Image (tube, rainbow, N blue to C red; front, side, top):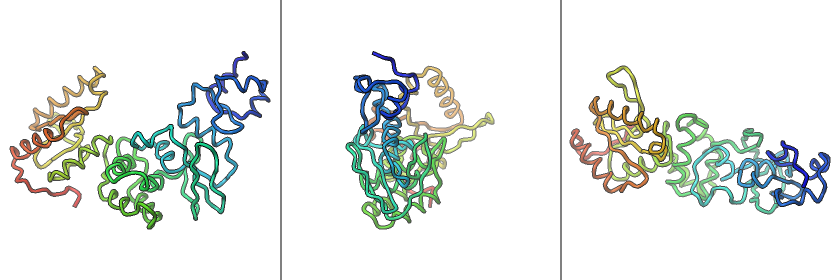
Length: 304
């Protein structure tokens, strides 16, 4: 069996290009290639790549007014989604300008009455991050929307700005999901770093605690500064979410120990949370720590 040219093992290509590169029709039907869309081939080793599957579909698209949208755009932007909406699920493509929605197997086609704001990412035209988030309002609940939306303005590299989010919500208007979208917007916070942190923040607020600062900066007596995941600054209490990388990376683990020891030396009470934590226990421990530091049980927002 003839080997594929190296570059064709790394990207999708049309059957026309394959023939021009010397591949026979029989070679194009071999099992090391898949047909993600008619007239296009992709190395089977790349079959699980969302970017490559989108690039394959892009070779098939003939609409100049088309963009990847909804959950597909959200994933390409790096927004966290529930597993039920992660690839491999049908790709979403939106068109405008009077073009008929795409009808291709494995694709959900959408049509917009007006041109959409788009961006070129990884060689693909996708709906803007803020507009893609708004489109998720039809498939996500409020908590899931907050997790995805926090990524838009989160650390370390925001995808958009708060004014751009508000403008996108205004453009979204009264479409289906508008109510939950506007409710989720009220809970978005600059500085969040992970969906687990967002969920934890929403949980402590719902339990009646003051709203913490996501990844608030903490100045230390040594002259250094650090970030805390969820900072209750007035009481010097800190909730820290330990992800899996904290446990498996020895260097990260050592840094965490030094950092938490220095925080303790500066008078901070630190409550650590991980995936296996019982949130009822965490809330009890938080209540004890906050009351020890003088909290009177009254919730108040740091974003009022």
